[in-house]
Image (tube, rainbow, N blue to C red; front, side, top):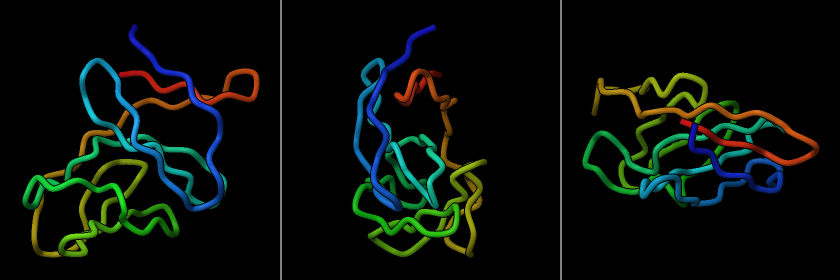
Length: 98
């Protein structure tokens, strides 16, 4: 299974990473790490730069919020979830796989 290994992120921060040619966003929300596709399903804009709080990321373009655990959107602009990726801790590093 393809995977990428990254060091843990600072609290409530994000980092764009690539996995098999796909742009992903590694997020730290409240100390937990999540990985989602770096693409809002409303207008296909990047989620990078969005605010991470309480298990959600807000799209920097129109403010659509996505649940980092499930990818489910909150609000009326889209009903299409963002793809999420498996994240696990291995020897103090974050491992993301699809």
